[in-house]
Amino acid sequence: MRNKKALVFVLLPLFLSSCSKTNELYIGGAYDTGNFETNYYLEHNNVDKLKIGNVIKKDASSVTHISNPSRNSFIEGLNPTDQTYFYKDKNGNEQSSFLEWNDDIPHDDFGFGYGPTKNLISIDNSFAYGFLSRLYDGRVRCDGYYAESRVQINKTGFSTFFPKELKQATYFGLSLRGQTSCEGFEYSLADINLNIKFYKHNVLKEENDLIEININNLQVPSNTHGASSLMLFYFIDVFGLEYQKYIEDIIAISIDFSLNSINGSSVDFSKYGTPLDDKDDQNNPHFALMLYEMMLPDSIWN
Image 1 (spheres, helix red, strand yellow):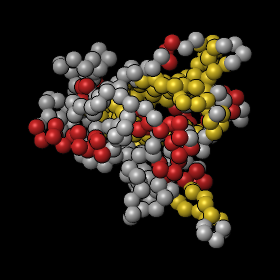
Image 2: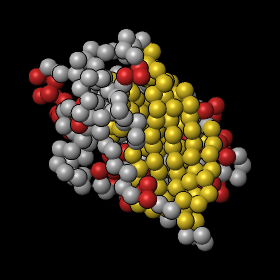
Image 3: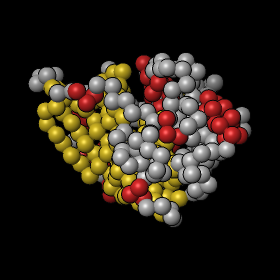
């Protein structure tokens, strides 16, 4: 079922390379193999070894928005001012421009891009290094039928340290989509429970607070051939007016998920990736989350 035609294997690396950096610090070709089952990024980068103190859990299901923006459209759940670029023209006059949901980097045919303007590398260049820099460079989607992903994860997810400590932010965004390994399995809607864990450094106690945000029954469009969705939530909606005390000094993040169902699938969804998307499992189909961009727009780091 997941043996793709030879042409696919020829074209897939080309599309993937067009949507990724060429100077990443990882073994050449890793995670861009052209083979669905071997593309999973499963690293936890020692984040799972952090000493944990307080554990704070929040359910953000009701305050999380997910939309499928088209070009030159408003992003659902995003405050209008957060999709506006303010700048001064050559005469020093204040101007503003609508930020568009563009493919990859800005094109001549489009104006200011939301991703290229709001990405983490544009905020702090320390995000520009390493394999996961591809999640910080503003390419919120990747056109191309065979463009599988920029970072592909299974249910066990991944973890990473940020290059600096977070000091201030107002919202979190994740550009993503779902994907199955079933050949010919077209557009569908996956129902997942998404878990986002932030690790907040507590200097006085020499430990870290674990802040776990759960988003249940998130409807993620899947098999969309490169078109991605934007999931976002505002910290004030999750933590209340004192949200700043929860997010200040965050040093790391983990993301994992569980699959509840896939709308329209003829395959029992419980069969997807058992056990835990074992890449050697040839008897069951696989489901993955395809991540394009992880965003903390207009954030401040130290």
